[in-house]
Length: 394
Ligand SMILES: *Cc1c(COP(=O)(O)O)cnc(C)c1O
Ligand SMILES: [Zn+2]
Image 1 (cartoon, rainbow, N blue to C red):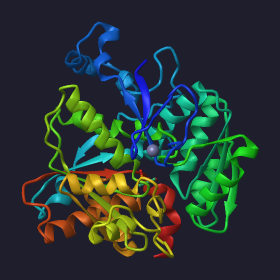
Image 2 (image 1 turned 60 degrees about the horizontal axis):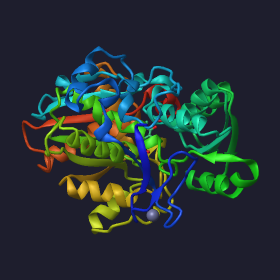
Image 3 (image 1 turned 180 degrees about the vertical axis):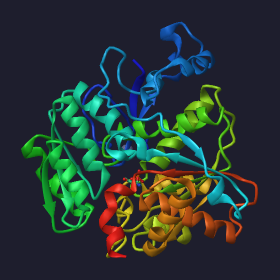
């Protein structure tokens, strides 16, 4: 087994990984899977350090990190070829900014966003542990990713979306065979509806950080980036932040890699980029708070960032502070303008969420929160193609 147990991120209580689990049964906070790092490689008669060298020959998907993922060796992953995305230099956009800029282009994932990473691993685990009906609230890409992997796994997907979710996301879920319910409200209202009905309906709640394995899929962002940079992490990471699984997952990956002896103790400075219309983490970071209060009247066209209250808030805030990074908000109008700037400079039609990071980079350079010459990695988490309405209206 690659995972030994689940551990609460807040109170440390241990939980059994071998049955379906949501939040900590004592304190209601997220659970992390603890990977048996001592055993990594041993199954193949390798030392952990030599496992790193064997990766090169493996498949170009996140399942190349098989021993670092929770799915038992004898179980078949539910896969559509997720991960293995390119890390591209962005020299033209960086001209004048004087930074060594790279884009991790996650729009090439199945269902065109990095949500595929989390869903591939979490749906694999849910199926292995006996779930039959999976439910998720989604204001954007999570629904499509769950629909795709549930279809692939032969499981039911129940997706709750705010009525004003981009049309492409709603259509995508339906065409992938999911049961879609539109709610007059925000993603938090969708989540509440699932909580209310899940027991009676027999749904397993796949919400961000409310089960322990989506973050395991997202942590592969960290492994992949490290491998692509020859096991040297960049100076700065800009991450468009909603629920924060990518940020939290990468940080977990860095810890695991250090324990494996694959990287040293140096960490990138992590920056959360949010929308001005929904910036709970920015607000809490600036106020020096440990938790982030709910952001009232949340609105932004970057649907992945429209998360007014995140259950992993305390984990994100800790990472931003420990890494000596920060949090910054960008106006919608700026994001939309920046989509074209990135597109015409680099040939990528990025999601507004990805564009937000490019806009944030300019601000962080202007305020000298990022120094000249630093290596910066931006995560373009999705494709602009799912947000066409946004471009028409501006
Ligand atoms: C979901 C999503 C995000 C936010 O990711 P979290 O892990 O929830 O912080 C960013 N960008 C896009 C395109 C998304 O779909
Ligand atoms: Zn707990």
